[in-house]
Structure formats: C-alpha cells, structure tokens
Image 1 (cartoon, rainbow, N blue to C red):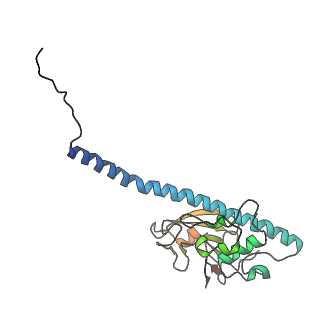
Image 2 (image 1 turned 90 degrees about the vertical axis):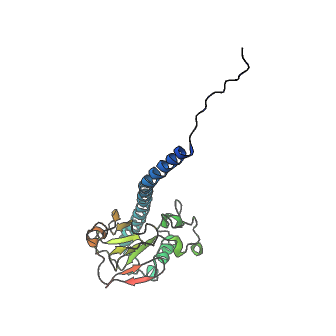
Image 3 (image 1 turned 120 degrees about the vertical axis):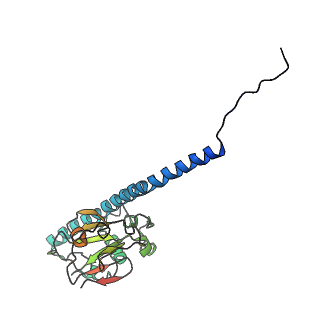
Length: 221
C-alpha cells in the first residue's frame, strides 16, 4: 500500500453556469409575473363585483318594501330626503349603513374597499374615509331608469373621457367593475386598448344624473 491519498473528483457549478441558471429563472419569472398579476386582479375584481351586487340587492329589497309602504325610494339624490344629502359615494354608503339598508350584522364598511384600496372593518362613520372607498355611484336614478344603466363602478373609470385612469386604484387602466341598476355585474376590459366601444361595454348614464365619486360630484351632461 502506497502513501498516496487519492482525492475524489468533485464537480460543481461554475460561475458562468450559475449566472446562466439565474438568467433563465429571471426570464421565466418576468414572463409569468404579468399572468399571475392578471389572475390576482381578476380574482379581486370578481370579489368586488360580488360585493357591489350585494349592495344592489340590499337597495332593491329596501326599495321594494318602501314602495309597498308608500315611502320614497333610497336612490342617491333621488326623491328620498334622507338620501338627498349624499354629495359623494362615501356619504351615500354611510347613509346605507346608518339606516340599516346594509345588513350590519354580517358586514361593515369593509365591503366598499377593494384591490389596493384599504378596507376599514368598522361601523363607525368617522373612520370610513374616501381613501377607503373603491366605488363611484350614479345619483339621480329613479324606478323608471333602465335596469342596464350603470349604478356602481370602480373609481378608476373616467366616464367623461370614456376611458380608464391609468394611475387610479383599484385597477388602473387594466379593467373596471360595473354593477347595473338591475344588479348585474361585469368586469370591463380597457376598451381603448382593445379598440372597442366604451359605451357598449360600460353602458350609458342618462343625461341629468350625477356621478358621485368617493370625494366629489360630477354632473352628467
């Protein structure tokens, strides 16, 4: 037996091989990220649409009761004096909570939040601020308004310019959520990017109505 020690060959990654692997992983991640983000947005949009539809069901139920009782309905800035004072969607949602239109046993102001819009889990009006509100509502609708007219929609919609706002939450210019007077909801893509007709996708708000944003009121010509 000789005194030489045989050293085992060990083969690992070279620096170049490691950099190639990292580059491949980075490329795959870059390709997959938009798809993952898109799926997350779509999921959040569906959640918001269901919340919006739930609000519409609450309003519809109360309006049916009020109609049978001979009372005025509770559309924002409609005939009902209690709800006439709502100059923003934030104020209108506060009135829905205050007058128990929304089932406060099972929900709170958090149902008006959304993707990137921080929800507040409270029934305290003072804590529900415009920055916690992801929705605009249409004021001035009546029982005679078409069921296909938009009533609630995410605040990234720029109705005056028939487009979506790229820098506005919750979805920028990627998509928007729309809930009609009849309670139907849809997830609307960016019509401009797809070269589609905005009104056909979104719907037409009747002249004389108002768009109540979380912090302001905009007249519809």
